[in-house]
Structure formats: structure tokens, C-alpha cells
Length: 80
Image (tube, rainbow, N blue to C red; front, side, top):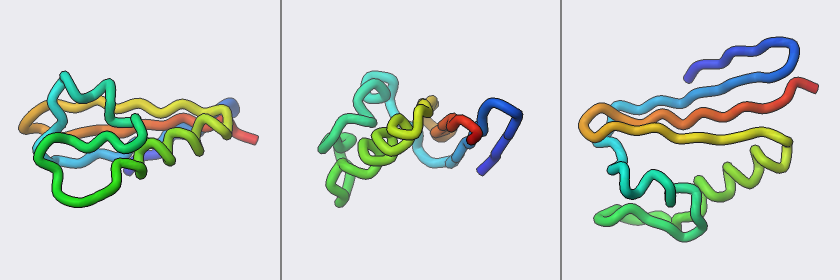
């Protein structure tokens, strides 16, 4: 987890070194009830709820991933 704060915004990143997410699925990971093929368990709501919360605070949330390398979720929130 990393955090960078300036006078305007705070940028947070959470990185894993898992399998990664295939390019064709990246655009859907924030959709409600979307689950990656072969995923065990979960409801497909966690990332959708997280993104809704961040956007309700006037922030943004993004994902980047590479197969075999891992995934990075980044979000930006304005500083009050």
C-alpha cells in the first residue's frame, strides 16, 4: 500500500503479486455482480461498492494488471 498526499489530493495504491487479471476482463471489474471466470466465492460486489464510495467523495478509482505479475488498484481522493 502506498499513499501520496499533496495540497489537492491523496493518491492511494494497493498492489498484489497474484495471477493478474486478463485484459479482456479489466473493463468489467468494477461492475456489480461481475466475477472473474473460475473465481471461487464472493458476490462480485466489493469492488463496485468501493468505487461507488470513492466516487461519492469526488474521487476516482482505476485498475491496472498484467498476467503473471499482479494487479494495482489506485484511487484518488480530494483533500478536505
